[in-house]
Image (cartoon, rainbow, N blue to C red; front, side):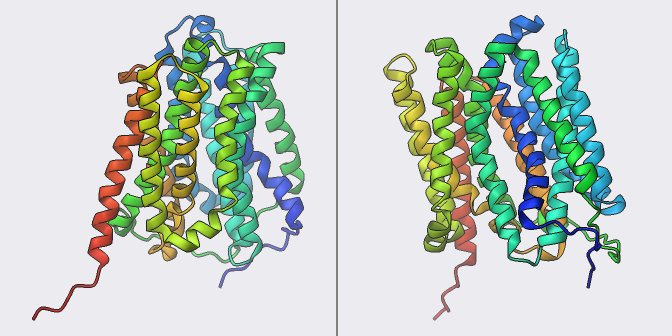
Length: 402
């Protein structure tokens, strides 16, 4: 039995106020930057594909870093990983704010992602240490899940306002200032939670990688969140570049998709209880395909519009929530004894799938259209549906032979 260091004595509201900023900033660093993406090639004298890398590589490092920093946090503790990651995030954000070349900007975005990844690892490890066997843990994880949907609703709006009144550099200066406030708060209040008597464990991860259910549900999460990633990679070019939306109008339209996700999340408990994990993923994949069909119709029938581009994304948004609400439990259900490694692999693999396959969809197809979203959502949904059907058949009891 492990013991918790007595220094952690925060109430639940105080703990949420302490932890949530790091979860918010890791996501906000992606979303707040979106309204200025179309202008960045001209500002830095580069191509749209290079600027796309500043989105894709951020997500890659956010996922890969968790595999790196997880063992470090288990060895030296949560607090040093958190403080070092937050410090790197702040320095990289300030550097990005004053970048004048595309190469420097891309490198600093990578460092920013590394810092954000370290803070996420330390945050979720602390939640496991303190609330792993307590009912408050559901509240914490519920809040973090809501942040994933809520930040995309507000981030672009904030980025558009800051960019319009203060310029694009102020967006990254704002991230640095917010990170500094969170770091100062953590410096005084975030005490070490690594159990004092934890014995080092070296268990194989091969059973995880050999599990069909792990891959199917991880691919399901990748299908849902990857579709959203391709959407926010292309949406500025479609709505601002082709439809003529202002940055504020784009941000407001973009936010409606995230708000649909938030509204659907409120009913997650009921539909999970009714359909189970496999049923939710199956319905989620069907909604992704339905939304992709509607997007294709909108693309073929005329110029991009709210009706032809955003409303189909509402259908996809519901499918995303149906899917991501259950994929973690589906992927990790058999690996409670090596949950840390399983979680790290789950997030790392889905980040790689989303960033690599999603980026290929954006760069190989016309990123000024809805076709990257259509292609990614349809392809991934079909693959996951076949995999889910195969897993379901393999678990059906066989009829006795006559």
